[in-house]
Image (cartoon, rainbow, N blue to C red):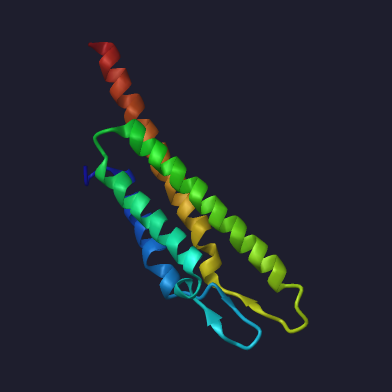
Length: 136
């Protein structure tokens, strides 16, 4: 259903991980070259898979339990991506020439926050349905 708040949160996640990484740089290399998601094949694949999972979660709105599980899988995927970025930023900081970390490294953090908000709304809907079933 389009009118549910978790649909809005999942749409924000899909836009965050599907569009922004290709416009915001992830980091700047020593030579001053900005690295975007399309420059790293595995990173871009993970961003695409995360966006597809968010859209798939929007489309399976009739089964809230599966929607909850898909969001959890998406959170785990974003945690792996965040771990890669943390590893990459720690290896960047040990260079003799200062490299910059880009704002694109924060995209998985925002994505996880919106996925948690969506899961909280899904849980609230599920509890509401269970309470109504109890009254019957």
